[in-house]
Image (cartoon, rainbow, N blue to C red; front, side, top):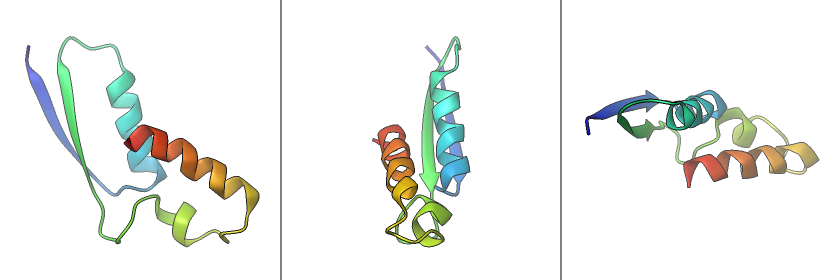
Length: 69
C-alpha cells in the first residue's frame, strides 16, 4: 500500500486538528504525518495565550493530546 508522507508546520490547534482529519478521512492509502513546532511544547495559544487556571483550556489540551498520542 502507498504511504503519503506529510509535514504540518505548527503544532497548535489548527495543525493538530488538521492531522486528526487527515488520519480519520476515508482513503485508499496510508498517511504518515510529522508535526513541527518552533516553540518548546505543542498546543499553541491554548498553552501560551490562555490563563492556565481557565477551566476550558485544560479540556482542550486533553482533546489535542489524544490526537497527538
